[in-house]
Image (cartoon, rainbow, N blue to C red; front, top):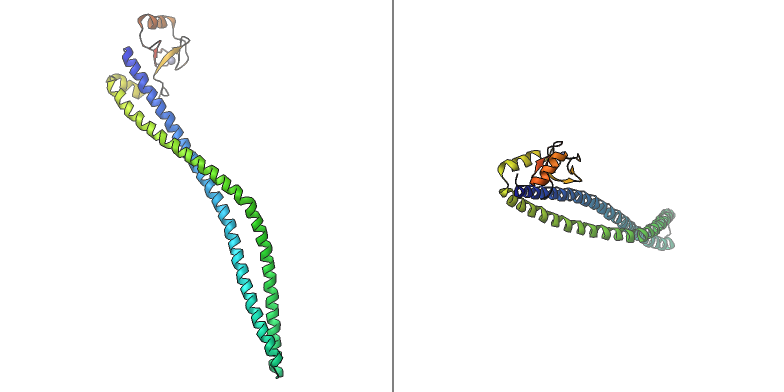
Length: 235
Ligand SMILES: [Zn+2]
């Protein structure tokens, strides 16, 4: 392999490693976005549940107040009739009616008191929780915006790498490209590596000194006797 070919292999290898790194990050972003969206949904639901409960209680209170008002009006009419009635049977019936209405008013008023107590509690809960929820929602929305931006940049990068890879690939001799593609996975992405302190940077085994001197003297690219990766001393 010539030095030029080695440089091209290094180049395509760098593109592939970088592509893998960006794809890995994209996957992480996807997971993060999913998690944040779930958190966001839970927070919004918590807020909605609180507000909805308050609204339900307010409506119920209004309804009960109307019922009390209606009963009070009926009571007033009944009391007026009682003043005028002469027959005993009618008088008794009106008395029963009066007592029924008074009971109803009492019962409904008690229910209103209960609802008011609950309303006070939930209003306090809303005052405590909703600002925190809204703060968290805002934070999550900002995080999501950042992640979306990062995601679009990553996609653009991947697109660039695909194009660059095609350009580099065209210049690499077929047999070398074949070797690279076939061994890429086995060598965990590192098909061609430099020497590092006289060892193969791929597997870490010392290059035999005879081979190393040949590499230095002849400026050649060899295969690591231990792992089989291409090794260069200098490019
Ligand atoms: Zn090696």
